[in-house]
Image (cartoon, rainbow, N blue to C red; front, side, top):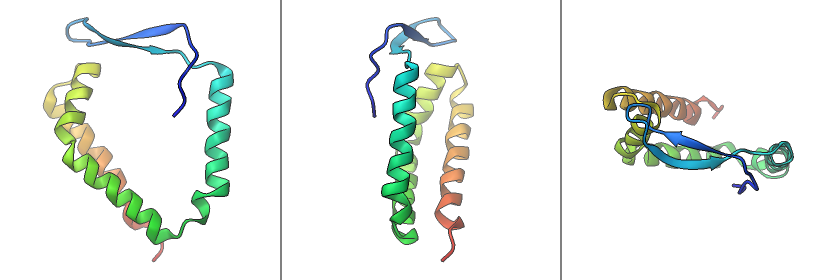
Amino acid sequence: FRTSSGPPTHAVQNPATGEVLGHVPEMTTGEFDSVVQSSEDAFDNEWKHVPVQQRQRVMLKLQDKIRKHTDDLARLITLENGKTIEDARGDVFRGLEMVESACFIAPQ
């Protein structure tokens, strides 16, 4: 995670009410380039050397966290996107399906 040096900042609004939920800084081009480089370095120097079974364990932990926090994630989606809670739960479920697929796609 990198903290942006922004300004400017952008308001995050609840589209249903117009309420400002918070502000997020705009990432600079230099910050973006730094994050991309850091990600590439992490993959090249660390993640690609992690055995498949260990990677799967990481994804299974993510899967568990998504399941445990489905309602919290759905509430955030509802606040930030104006979706109904049921639509938001569906979004979380579709994301969970992607994580589940990632857990079992890798060759054994």
